[in-house]
Structures are given as structure tokens and as C-alpha cells.
Length: 202
Image (cartoon, rainbow, N blue to C red; front, side):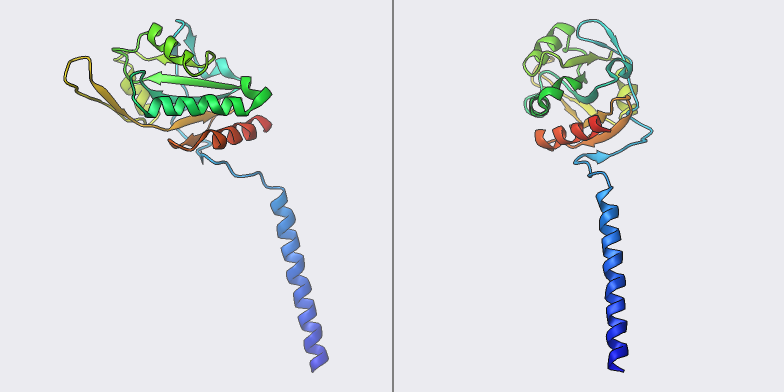
């Protein structure tokens, strides 16, 4: 009885070990998880057709071969926008030689004040290769809805001192122009750079 029990236990442990080993090997073939929220295949944030701060028409096709990161904001934003664009610039620096394969794109939710000249100067504060994109006031609502982006004007003490409440996340596209990730505000440059590396390696 004891011999039989011993053999049964040994066989059971052998099976368990084999299963664990197989699971471990299978896990080795899995791709590392993204830091951002994976929204691959989403039916929103699928693209745009806008004019950049140089007056050139832009779509996602212009950035094929690069990972494009889109952020909605406005140039007079006191905190969220400069923080997010600063992190985007830091992520580009962290990529080293692959930094030129990251394209930052800033879409203004304040077309009344954000002229092409102002947006161009604003982008230069972070990275001269980043582009600001302009959507006319009558086209902005539909664009924002297509990205599930919220924005609202908050009146100030004077007609021109208003602020804009707006969504604060970034949309990340792969080198084929497909929407892949959503990065929440404050995710950090390291997390973004890591995800860009993974997308470039695909």
C-alpha cells in the first residue's frame, strides 16, 4: 500500500511539474504588457484631417513608420498641458536613437486664441518636431466626440481670460497609424517610452 501511494504521489508531482513547466514556457512567448490602456481595435480615435501650425494638411498617414502620440489641450493651460507635453519630450529623449520615431501631436481645444503662430511657438518650448493641429470652431465638437474627448469653456473675469476644462489623456498610434493605447494623465515619461519601444519592435 505504501509503495503504491509513493508511486502515485511521485507520478502526481511529475504531472504537476510538467504542467508548470509548460505554462512557464508558454508565458515566455507572451509579449510584455503595455503600461497604457490597450484599446487596439477601438471604434473611436481612429484618425483626423487637420491643419498643422505650418499650414500643412495632416492625417495619420503622414506619420506612418512612427509612433504618434495625440494630446488635446490649449496653449494657455496652466498645468496639465505643459506637464503632459514635457513628459512626451522626456519620453522622446529616453528613446535615444529611436527618438525621431516618436511624433508628438497637440490638438487645440481653444481655436479662438490658439493661432498657428502661437501654437508653433508653444511647441518649440517642448520639442521643435512636435506639431500642433488646428480644428476650426465649427469642426471641433465632432472631432472631440470622435475621440471621446471632453472640453468646456470656463468663463474668466474678462472675455479673454477664460480657461478650458478638458480631458487629459494621450492616444498612442502604432507605425501603421492604428490606435493602440490610451495613456492617462500622469503616467510618466518612462512608461510612455517603454510602450513606444514595444510598438516600434512589433
